[in-house]
Amino acid sequence: MAVGEVRTEHRNGVVPLAGLPLPSSKAQSFRGDDAAAAAALFKALGDPVRVQLLSLVRQAPTGEACFCDLADEFDMPQSSLSHHLKILVKAGILSRERRGTWSWYRIVHEPLELMDQLLRPGGPLRDQPGADDEDPTRCD
Image (tube, rainbow, N blue to C red; front, side, top):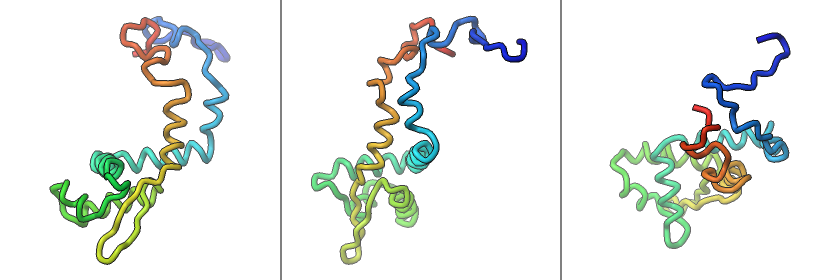
């Protein structure tokens, strides 16, 4: 390939996304600080236990969950569970309120809205070009 030449074919000879332009206005909204913030949120949710914790707090009838109830759902030491919750609180995904001897956790919606913006700019991912395994323009 010559210097300055743009590669137009994928390794299997298929042009990725059939040459469709990327939506630059949406892509530009996740640069710099926004991209770093989104990456930190995804990192905080990068453990199955933390995803389960978020799901349990989300499903709580009152919108909040007590540590005592969350601990009953996991077969792990309370110190490990507390560590996972601390990561979610530090990332801003959950808030913690102390009531007596127990901590209560609630979802903080703003960070999750940032993740939602990143994941849903053009609708569900299955509707995006190249998202179908049968689509010959998909990169493998």
